[in-house]
Amino acid sequence: MAECDVCGQQIDMPYECRRCGSEFCAEHRLPENHSCPGLNEWNDPEGVFESDIDQKRSGTTDSGLFDSLSARGGPLSYFRKNVSYLFLGIMVLVFALQYIVYPVLGFRAPGPADPGHPLWRATFVLRPEHPEYVWTWVTSIFSHGGFTHLFGNGIALFFFGPIVERYIGSKRFVALFLTAGVLASLGQIGLGLFSSDPAGVLGASGAIMAVMALLTVLNPDIKVLLFFFIPMPIWGLTLGYALISVFGAFGTIGGGIAHMAHLLGLVIGFAYGKRIEDEVSLPNQFQFGGGGGGMGGMGGGRRRF
Image 1: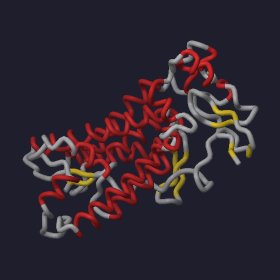
Image 2: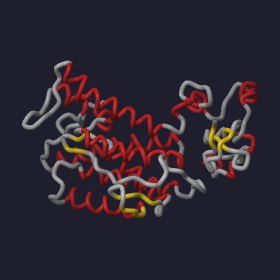
Image 3: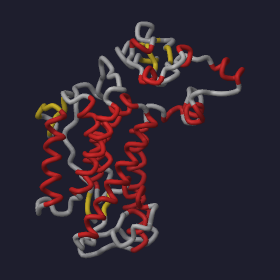
Image 4: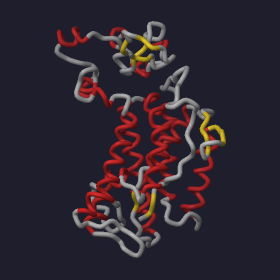
């Protein structure tokens, strides 16, 4: 049985919004009743709940190829509104490649006093000496330096990602996550080149910091649980990470952590949030997975490798 994305009511025959792709009860089916992001680009009143029949008659779609593929019944329909979980799944799969598949094939992972196999590093780590390995601009975002690194970033993405994706839509979420991840990584190795630091970087936290900063702009008073039991507004958590990142990037604290990547992610997320804050209508209600709101603080962080 379907569930209304606003009030959580169980419904047999939900209404699906053609713009945001969410499902609603009769009370919240109208765009203005569920704060539909499509209202911001709504030039034609028939466009929000446009009929598939009308689209087939005209032979065109206003939503484009992505929306056609991700519409109900399309090959990408599951991933609409679920990109955060898709990215989380990719992180887990890449982790398995890093520490199970590659070592079994003879390409050992790095360890104490062991830099690891060159192919392993060339696949998963963005390094100052090889910025031309452009695939690592992306693969390093989904790679991690160990289980605790993956767990910390995964928890943050699990709780923050779906909220931001609900606010701004899946396409803009993908663009924010990947753009922030790449730019944060390049900024970190740029600092390494400037300071003659040969360490590479890997991890998703540059992107996740951007997500957290954007959420802080859009909904600064949303509650999170620091260390899973200390309630605080997200702006306080973001401010704390910003201060740590500033002192870490330009000081000596937190060795082994890519503080510049964190700082750049926060700046990107904040700047993008300020740009779109007047365009985004926040839902009246939001239910966190598993009840009780918020997440327990980030234990991962983007790593220098």
